Image 1 (cartoon, one colour):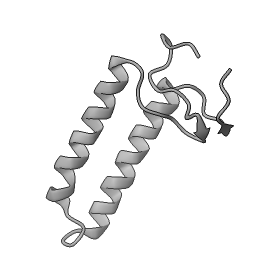
Image 2 (spheres, rainbow, N blue to C red):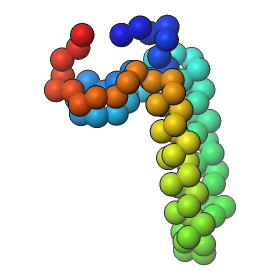
Image 3 (cartoon, helix red, strand yellow):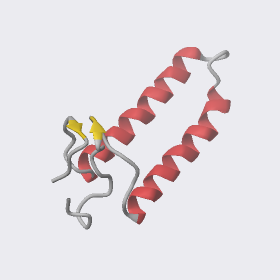
Length: 82
């Protein structure tokens, strides 16, 4: 794995990405988390359920796009490393 090139490593088990390995990845992860924490009480699933689910799905899509662009290519893994 080229740690200088990827912000997010592929997960060791399963499919997807693990925790960030660079400061840029941590900034993205912390900003994403902060926006989620701030947005959930403002939109609230009880008052605006459609807007709430659109917000959550949009945030997941944003993080997924960033992980695809700046992360190690995802693949199914059973614990082995290259």
